[in-house]
Length: 453
Ligand code: HEC
Ligand code: HEC
Ligand code: HEC
Ligand code: HEC
Ligand code: HEC
Image 1 (cartoon, helix red, strand yellow):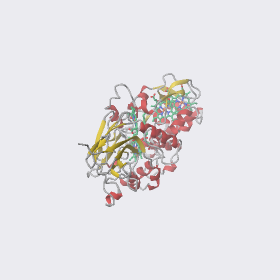
Image 2 (cartoon, rainbow, N blue to C red):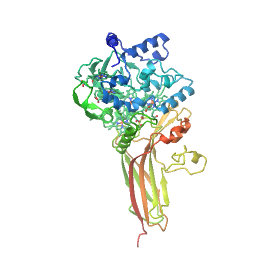
Image 3 (tube, rainbow, N blue to C red):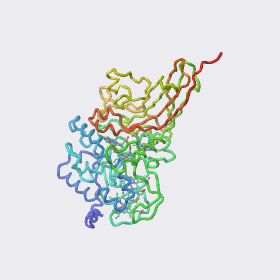
Image 4 (cartoon, rainbow, N blue to C red):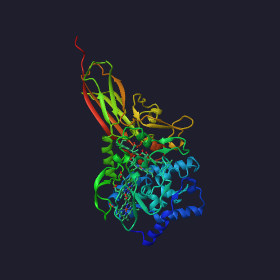
């Protein structure tokens, strides 16, 4: 335990102070003295996660490998936020930081031009324990901008046992999706529209009525102790927050996270393929593929859909020779899908994949062009699949005369980022870390036979 009894007392004395930066300018544009005062208040009453870990070892170990812990270490975040500051002449200011490191922002550590390696442990912890357990007003889509720095940790336990470090208080809102809406609904910098809409998608789904919240799926329960000195409880909540991302750099639990992402993605959708068992030589036939978003409590994919790629790969080959008669969803030599983002398609070296089915989003800027920098978007084109809904796609193909047996294989594939994005932002060094996950797979033989008269 790091905190002395003295600071604990100070925390109690300060218990009536409610730190609010409802207007973000309070933090950014406040004079030096105010920021200093505010930073001190936070430092006195908020701790970095290692401190919590001494009494909450389970939660700490789980959190350490979560994307919430990674939010500032994330090399793509670091690169993109720097590009954002450059391209907007620092107008972005605290826009990214108020969600990715709310305390870093409020303590004045993330002023334009700051260096990630100079952040204090609390700021560098990104979405730390106290970001969630001292969160004040929940302002949908505006990030962590207000906190109760009164030393009390609020949570879902109605009868917490006392401890010497902090007061505990029950709060019902930790069970609600609305709690997550603070950050999982991302408004554009000018607040004119929503760029990421995970919370909205959930609120329009039929998961709302039966009370299936974000926490139900992303914080599964288990039995154990909430704190080393507390009783065994049968409803602790896992804090690994598995989604589709995994660390691209060395990070606690990386291999375990990759395995969990694979498992989640394999349990996200159902694929139904309709194809004939027998076809006639050189005659066109149709294969249809239906994807049902059967498990995600929001669109599939959701969140940063302009970076995610979920797509269909369909191959029709000759069983005997392996010759290909139809294909879509294959990659070029850079590992990119063969659409207009492929360097090889653009250079005319390979033909465009005209059958490509890609479930993702596109951020469009004010001139109507696609931008890879989402803060420049004026609108978002969304081609994702809403919760419990299906998308059907048809492909036409044929086999030449002389073929006897065909193999049809179909896969639903996913990756967090495409290589062209990493090239565009100068992070070619991380392309080798990109993994493709197979969500669904199907294979069938098709006989080729002329109908006998
Ligand atoms: C000295 C040990 C100790 C330290 C350090 C500590 N806690 Fe706790 N905390 C406890 C105990 C004991 C409980 C009650 C557990 C129970 O009743 O099952 C608890 C309960 C909680 C709860 C549940 C409150 C509720 O009513 O739902 C939260 C949230 C919490 N702590 C967060 C934190 C955070 C965040 C930190 C670090 C800033 C932290 N704790 C540091 C011992 C500690
Ligand atoms: C019924 C279970 C369920 C519920 C409810 C649910 N999710 Fe998910 N979530 C999933 C599954 C399955 C995935 C993986 C597939 C995907 O990416 O959509 C996922 C993925 C995610 C991702 C990564 C998405 C991406 O593609 O980048 C985020 C972020 C997320 N969920 C946040 C939330 C939030 C916030 C809520 C509440 C508003 C929520 N989830 C509610 C099941 C659920
Ligand atoms: C992204 C937000 C978030 C972060 C970060 C976070 N928690 Fe929690 N925590 C929650 C929510 C939400 C619940 C309640 C879930 C529910 O009841 O459905 C919870 C529950 C708890 C509980 C009560 C016991 C339980 O498992 O339900 C404790 C104790 C706790 N958290 C401690 C911590 C500690 C310690 C850390 C950091 C190591 C941490 N939390 C980080 C959101 C967070
Ligand atoms: C203070 C802001 C904040 C709050 C509150 C918050 N999150 Fe997050 N969450 C983030 C950010 C930022 C990331 C992405 C970090 C990164 O990868 O750079 C993230 C990542 C995630 C991921 C992993 C996404 C992926 O693609 O792998 C899941 C799942 C998730 N959050 C669920 C939740 C749930 C459920 C809640 C509510 C209990 C919640 N979050 C509350 C900001 C927040
Ligand atoms: C309102 C809160 C919020 C703001 C503001 C915000 N983010 Fe995020 N960010 C999130 C959440 C939530 C996720 C997780 C979404 C998901 O996994 O699909 C995330 C994920 C990310 C990721 C990791 C995964 C990915 O697909 O890229 C990066 C990188 C990122 N954000 C960069 C930024 C940058 C750069 C800015 C500022 C220009 C920014 N974010 C502003 C909430 C926010």
